[in-house]
Length: 147
Image 1 (cartoon, rainbow, N blue to C red):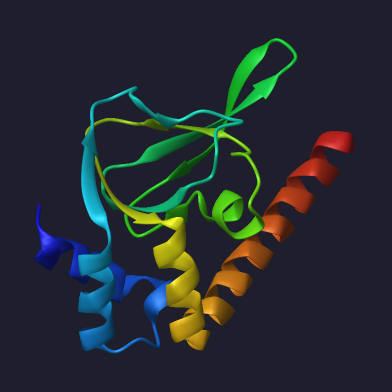
Image 2 (tube, rainbow, N blue to C red; image 1 turned 60 degrees about the horizontal axis):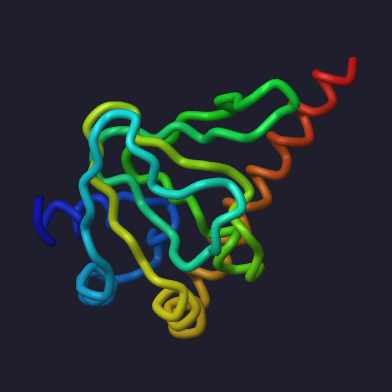
């Protein structure tokens, strides 16, 4: 797809809403674009959290282990970030991720993510907001499941 498509997707993300085009292009040059086929796993639950990913095209399925196997708990599409919790918290992956159809992602290694958050405080604030919304949704799902 190339850096142009990656830059376009990053520019549209809430995460980079307050980052200027020059800085977005710099971020786009700091990562790598990867392609996956339908069903292919990007990583497994429990793996080291060495990078975060942005969906450039296609979708991913978020899969967690349960008592009787695995369960899909979410689908993420273009412009959505995943894998950031393990990177930020220096913890193993909390879920597995599989391509849902043809998939292109943008991979940002841990050092790049941490440097980006130091360099762009607005990105760090947006990341906190995104994580807060995910926590709120998870809490609501847990409450419904317990009811």
